[in-house]
Image (cartoon, rainbow, N blue to C red; front, side, top):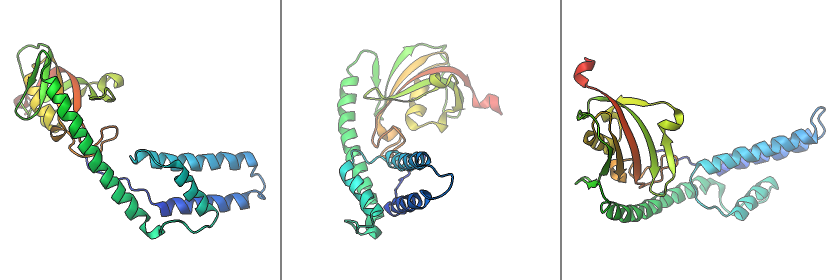
Length: 236
């Protein structure tokens, strides 16, 4: 997955809010435009803007300042900041926040892996990957170029689930080397018909990228059932 910064332009938000405000004044005298309809579209605009803000991981925002900014724009008041610098301010903050989140995640990960390797059945590898065999298979293990069919569930170390083929009621089938490095190494430790739990450090997963619910520097835990292996030689 690619690293993406979803930077919101305050100038765009401001123009949308101004258009909404102007449209409201004009619409009040238009035939067929009821106050109920104006209320509905007003809420829809607010919900749309809120969704844009939420999708970009700002963390906790000062809602009082946010509302003040919207009101200033809508009431034609001079904003507290130079609107030409708005995107620069946002980008610098997001970069700094991502770095801070990565540091925090690294500290949590170090503690997690130190404690986890002491648990019964957990094997720690030189790469930093840890794993535990939950069920033995038939002895046939996949190579990186092989195609594997799996059922899996992915969670963060705080228990948050970010993906699950079980929830979709559909297995995943891909060449093993198309998965993240932690999978490539870890799935070679379990055989067909078996089940494994992978504890993957960020450097073997998505590094410092933000991937939806997966924050920068996140440790990933996967419970994987290896249903079937299709050897690369058999695919030719």
